[in-house]
Image (cartoon, rainbow over all chains, first blue to last red; front, side, top):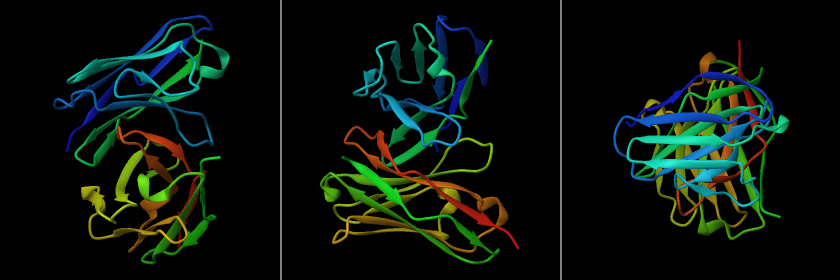
Length: 107
Length: 118
């Protein structure tokens, strides 16, 4: 199975900060990577698919990059509604794996 | 609008089975797959398996093989996930999600809490 390792596990940041979360796959996955945002008590929400494609309706301050084994989610200017937990997810031959999550907290 | 609506919360005893439903609306059900994801209290997301709503093909997470079965009923646009031989560590919120052609999960159900307790 392909393992996904996210870092950091948590980050404290202020409104307006640039935040970067990384995700590393245990083997190459081309661009089969998605990013999700989850708020407490809610279902996850798709932000980025195919490593760098922005899901419809998602603000442009969110961006994704990378291919192969190393990927990045960037929030260019953190907004109050962005405090949440973020997960990366890989897809490989109808098998999926999530990273362990990164909690973005208020500094 | 496109949505997935799941069945209500369940409380089960250890060793029992649970079957959760996920009714789709607002899109052509057989054009997308459905995945199931669970989240234990305070924990991260765990992918459980996938089913093609087109032909019923399935793929399950290795750790759940033999205990989980996913099915669909195309006449009612409903997907089902059955988990057997329940244990306390199966206590979690269970989500269904629509799988896009680029293998991302773009629409999610509201979640179903399953509690396993004696």
